Length: 335
Ligand SMILES: NC(=O)c1ccc[n+]([C@@H]2O[C@H](COP(=O)([O-])OP(=O)(O)OC[C@H]3O[C@@H](n4cnc5c(N)ncnc54)[C@H](O)[C@@H]3O)[C@@H](O)[C@H]2O)c1
Ligand SMILES: N[C@H](C(=O)O)[C@H](O)COP(=O)(O)O
Image (cartoon, rainbow, N blue to C red):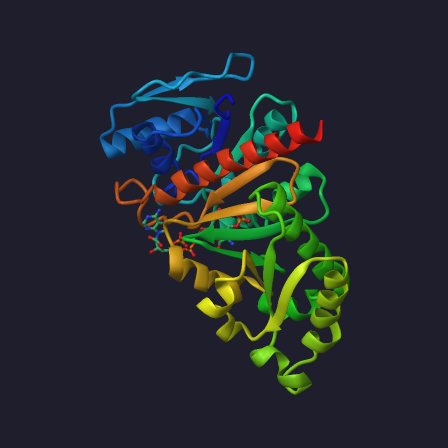
């Protein structure tokens, strides 16, 4: 099977995204990457870091570049404001978002195979007057998909989320029968198609302390989560829960589980990041395109210092290649 054609978006220009993209030329990868981002920004960051690599411009009308030591292919996306490490510029927000649109277009046209995203800064995009919750929601919109699922995975643990970037105040209202059923179906299907798990087992967390304590600490488990799980079990999905979130992350449950579904961002992700920060990958399930990302943010404090770890980006690239391979194998089997 040919090596996947990987598009890497550079992410927030002031953050560590450029540093991480530049570091890729030092590592063996499962496919040749093309970085979508500002050539000038990458060149400047390479100078800041004292790196001597060659940045070769690439455009979509050319053949996919071949791997070459010390060289990085770049699809240039100029920025209106020159980028400086650590300094956010709302004036660059639109250009940064354009990189995502370009990546989706190239993959949809069959000119690239998978998207791996370096971190973006949600705050500066919103400061620019553009409503932006995160890549996950934005890519769903770009791909015309109503619902996707965010999952982070690392060191044998997979944690998916029933809600993503919502204020905590809005979380309980977002736990609804239809949305939760759709999320579990997407998760179940993706564990099969993207991760090759034939009959996955999913452990589902409750929303409230002690999974609601029989209705005395909240009714979402009794009124919504449990009925959804019972209904989906009758369709054959293997689901355990709702379990109290504070005690489900223990070997007794995890050894049997292929994934955990947490009800909200900071119920599941602190556990995953404590377990695997730097080695974990953020993957968007339910998109028509393959998209993975790093487990960390823009780390403005580390941009241009040479101290940013590239390990999560490497893991994200490997996972994107694996998912691409699994989807191709499934498509071949289906024909
Ligand atoms: N995939 C993404 O696009 C993504 C993911 C998470 C956060 N973010 C965004 O990033 C911004 C900053 O978020 P934050 O401060 O909460 O988290 P952060 O991950 O940027 O930083 C948290 C801590 O981890 C350190 N760190 C992060 N990445 C590192 C790396 N590769 N190597 C070594 N140390 C690293 C930082 O220095 C900091 O101490 C926010 O706007 C957030 O929304 C984006
Ligand atoms: N929720 C992610 C995390 O904490 O790692 C992060 O904000 C990135 O989300 P997007 O991939 O939707 O940008």
